[in-house]
Length: 371
Image 1 (tube, rainbow, N blue to C red):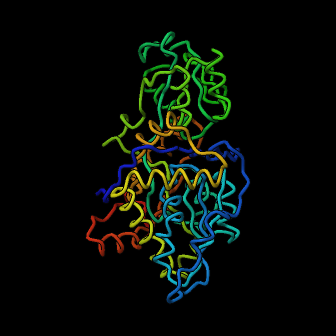
Image 2: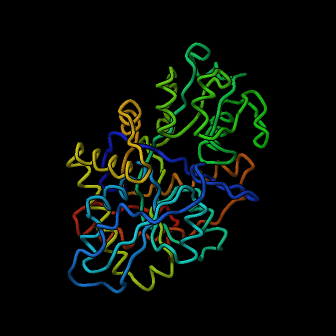
Image 3: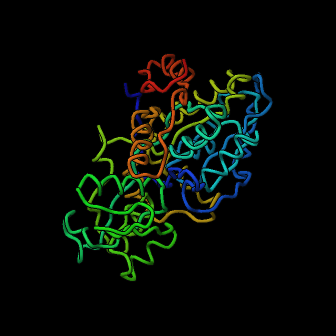
């Protein structure tokens, strides 16, 4: 059943990569380095009683699909729940590096896409992580050149970009093509539609030059394409039940969850309260998130990109577990992934305890939770 959901009116979506069997793909295609988040050190230790850990190390991306982390750290809403336990944030630009950091103990809790979550869990044979809850839904669109493509049927024979072979948007587009009855070789991208794997950083220029006819991409790339004259032909959320699908999860090291359940509870209380604050203060939340992003990236998002991107993202406590399983099934159907055993990937008991205490509905693990 859905948890209380906060509608975030504008957001920046990182592409969450869906793993290939033999290829470690990034979650957003922007690199793999991690950095200590110096801009967030003011969130360290608000005073009060220290919990069972001196420090909790949080990982996230400098993208507004990670707005819960951006705002929660920027406003001190997560640190507030931790008392004397210090928050140490680190930012990542790719899913695999965040999973590596989690496995190495460099972070304890992370905000990350569904695909690296699946990858990290299956590669460790279910030993490395658990998904604690959701964070964001949506934010993916098909944007086309309206002079070349006027209807969905017009995509046949056209060059359409996705961020990366096997990433979440690539798999979604391949699945959509298959359901249209068209044929495309998943590896080469050749077929009734030419699927061009193009880094999100270069796709807008390629679109502007005319070498691409459109793209199935996350925000803010979609809105950048619109600013270059593109038209949104399809919002992927319309293909999902209730217009929702997971784009960002909250994960935790199983070791940290076992040793410091009180810290995990406090972080989750902070994220739930952050989502409530975003909903109650949308203008302040927007400013806070963009300020945090400017500190991290050195550049604020312009309104013409920020506004439509933010509109398409929902911030939610619900992990939307059934959609994570569906995304994995789509990759299997495309021949890009062996059928994973996801049983036990979720442990939603800590989140549901927080939600119950807040008088909010509990969330469901779609049968993929721990026993």
